[in-house]
Image 1: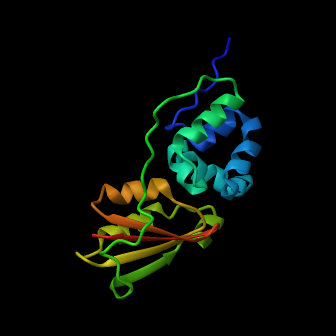
Image 2: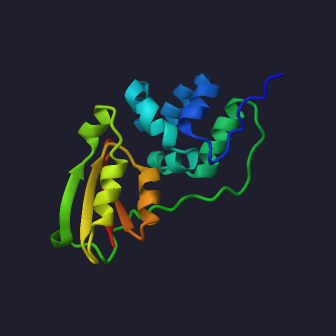
Length: 171
């Protein structure tokens, strides 16, 4: 008998939908931004690197709530005490508009099926102390924020609307 994927916070969205295609509508109903996953380009890029733990803040839902909703839908037992990732969503004291040295809008690149990760990380690495890099994205790019954090970059996520996020990075 084949064992289906066990849903955890580390489960990638792509793997979840490959194992349980019936969960796509539930995921979209819970996190409307994920309607974009119907675009094959985004499904094959963003969904392959985004975990459910990273996806939860996009939908303003607790990780534990999202995981247990999906697990219940496929008959898996409830998980307890799941930690959230904790993205900074309140303007930090280090932010100042006049310190922004570059703004990069990744939406066009994503629509073309390209990954902006390498470009953004190179730009963040090049920041001097106190400089701020601004990125505009159509969703919360959780994996990218986590990679930037590994470069000792602080972040602030400013959600303008459901499809526009400004992410600021500062060293």
